[in-house]
Length: 77
Image (spheres, rainbow, N blue to C red):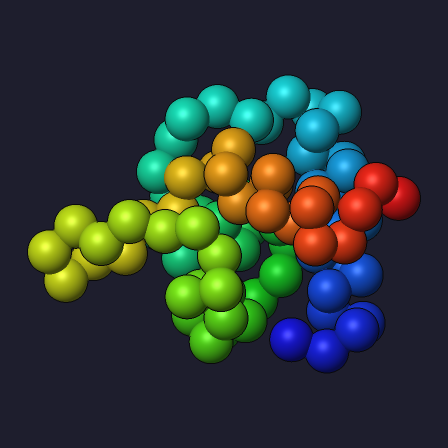
């Protein structure tokens, strides 16, 4: 993930906080990409850097933990 993409993700995290999307949903890569307004391929390439749970062959991302991780890494904007 380059700086531009990281900044886009961090900005979207701030927007998501204001919309109160921080529930304990487990999202697919596609669903998480839509919430963060980034490409699904970006999530798949960098998905192991985000909090995730393997459910068989499927990988799911807990939205609240992903948001927390991005806040810690990129700080509040």
